[in-house]
Length: 68
Image (cartoon, rainbow, N blue to C red; front, side, top):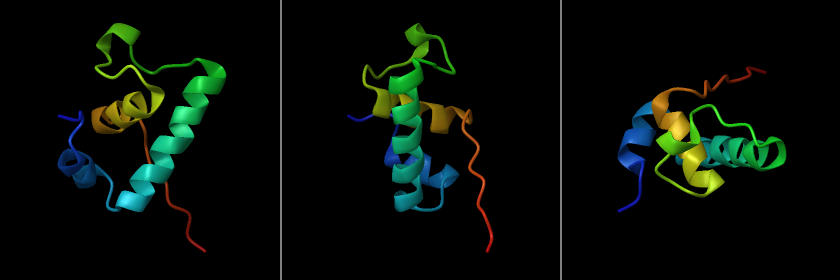
């Protein structure tokens, strides 16, 4: 079973596409800067993409939309 659940994440982020975009950006930041918002022992996933999704679920990533 994947963690966190897509159903829980879609309650936080209104679009699958936006979720993928946000998670990929955060995952790249983790790999480049080796900066994590939680203790490494608190993550359930080993890979950066899963960890980025965990941060979204935990509310550590705030999504700001730009209006044209």
